[in-house]
Length: 319
Image (cartoon, rainbow, N blue to C red; front, side, top):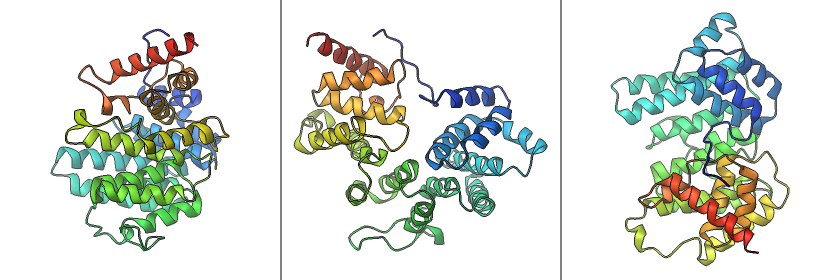
């Protein structure tokens, strides 16, 4: 393999790549057509809307669409996702209008949920926005957990999402992010443990322990002193489970570049380089900045990714 790595939000989705390019150029027709074709494939619709919203959030391209086709349901849902991204960015930057933008995004999500009642995407967007309410002051951020041992959190929103897309990849990632941001790492572990008790074997939710392990490593106070967590028993067990039941097994939806990248990293860090090479082969030149940037040495995530990919390829050539 050469040193080329392509970081593109569309990943393996060629149609989505074209729509992103058009949005970045100020054109929206391809996006409208793509979302219409995606229809009620909820996992694909959720993944595509996330990427399209990121591409549209830095421009007024959706305003042009709204002038031509204001009642389009896909537009209403996509604008809600964009409003959430802008509210989160304003809050992170500490901008004085952040509170008002939070309210605007929340209303946009509720409007999208009313207009598209079967669509899970507005509920995913509300879960993404929930990190701006760590004290759970808003009524939708409450609800009883499905197990008495689980912590308080935005369970009502998750229940609404599960009625529409029971094993939503992004939705459950958003729930984990809420606990990591608002409730502490231990709560995140409790949530992942509960989720693994009922998620199907081929679901991308089976990769959540890999994401959580990266986050724990990233936030460890003295990570240079840690024993490699991907070589420890729990790390080996989690990686082997994902390898056997998700990668070698039948995945329940299209594999994403971030998921493949987390598995490639876990295999490489766990000294299973020939298996990592097979994952890198599926990725080809594509890559994601995570988990590499979160676990990188001072040389940086890109260099670590190249090192891991090269080592994996050499391990295969020696066999």
